[in-house]
Length: 184
Image 1 (cartoon, rainbow, N blue to C red):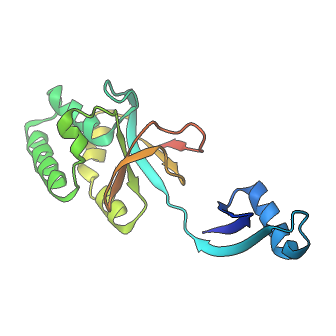
Image 2: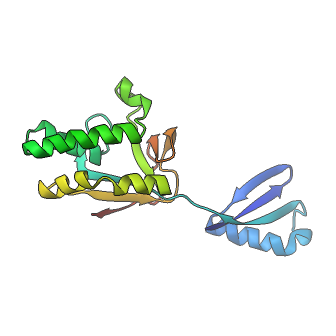
Image 3: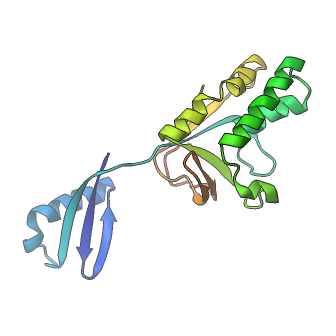
């Protein structure tokens, strides 16, 4: 949970929640009437949730996006390289058909992904459930030596061009936010 402040400076309303702004907002909460400009008024807003986003990927850089290759594509590459056993290929198709049925496929993929977008799961019951169902993909990566990573952030990681209840798709990934990446 974040504490945010709606501050009026003149006729302009600004939401503030960075540490420096929080300090300034706290001060203006206490002394709004005596503020030097006497025109700054802040209202404290408790309980604004931040959203966690996470992405499961390899270290390989995808040709189209120039970003680390996502888990679905990484497993597809194992299939394309004819590495999987016959029963694993059948399971791959069962899983692929299932996920294409229950996890919306962003429409830009039909166009060849011209914006070079990547998808991030939302830390929501829906996003977490769909990730928990991806055991086949994680098992194949482990079995065939494909190291997976999870990148996480609590801010929107780029310009959202698609969103559903499970995921967001972004282009122009931000460089001004904290994204942590760990092996899984």
